[in-house]
Length: 193
Image (cartoon, rainbow, N blue to C red):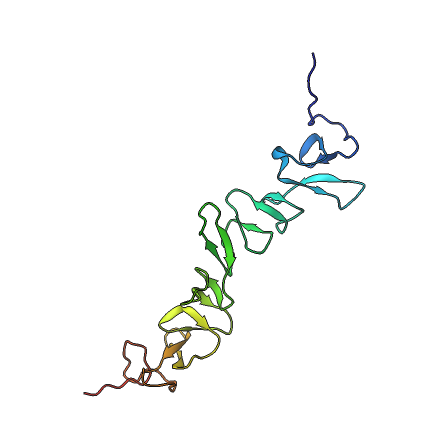
């Protein structure tokens, strides 16, 4: 009876068709929907073959985790790279603006770790990058130079350094902590009794 030959029964490949690594007897000139997680390896012109993509890639342009074109299930793309990750990488946050296509985006340079993109009010840092110090009253906002109206404060219990707000009438103030240890975080705060 007549029939169609199965491309998975090849003993050798016809010209301009190449074998697939891990699929015995399969030859083709390109990938299709059943082999989209393969790429053509042409590093050795005498041994061209289709090789499987990295586990993090659904489709890829080459070998390794740095060649993903699309991400495998349960992996998300890392912004401005050809990489995908199943876990949030250090220095990135998960952007779920499009819930069906979340992406890992790079934190602001002020942050070592962050929870969101920088906006007009905060850098959204969970920890500051080297050379940056958080505000005492907003530890998610890190800056790399002492702002006017603030002084550098070291927490005696933790050793952490912060910028603490001076009293409202001061353009600048001395370091050394709160004179009255008030809860407002102001330096040199005095009240008239």
